[in-house]
Length: 317
Image: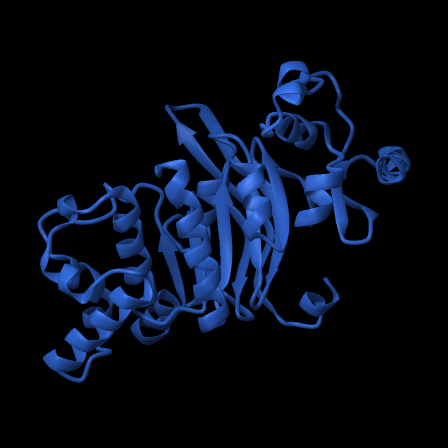
């Protein structure tokens, strides 16, 4: 973690709220006041069950949604204040997204070479047709596909191959930061590891920074430097991947950890699932508080010592 701390903050989310009106009076608090930072060159994993606000957070960062309140700073600049075509285009180059569904995110009427080259064309990155073709071919090779695949259509590829095409499209504009919005959830387990390994290789080669959104804590632990656990619009725990995976403290984090299967028949036969049931009558004021080095838990002031003792006991076991 010290190495990351020495790096600059690339993305800084401060008290982000994203509320949606449903009908005349109802309001959905999809994201309800979260704060976190992502350092240059790291992977920050955002994990939680469906509907907890993970994808909404990613879409707010990329400016698909206008936040209800709060601030998102990218590379030191408030993204809500980015004005002018030139500055907006630069932001859109710097921040890219890999989408969850490789079937729906690719235009079925376009050839693969044109899908990948969309960003190149929009931003005028190719000098001529030959340069455009060379760039696309190089991107196809980078993600493990053959340049000849460029003349085919998306329906001719498997799910894993389509996600590689989506990754190539994101890389085409040479971004600094990529939001990976559940990029492996629609893929077979055997293909998931291939895509994650590819993302890690690309990060090392091209000095990329990732926000990796998923609901599988074991996979998030594998790819992430730090993890934020999200529950109903709030971050309930943040820490290093090892710390969260081995010493998760918040009851919701413990419930996620208890659901991870292990290749041990005896353990699986006797596995105790933990169900998280928040106390609806509890009105204590809570926020993310540090209970260990770089380990934060959403708790009240009087619960801090309890969580610190809990952490020490887990580490002594």
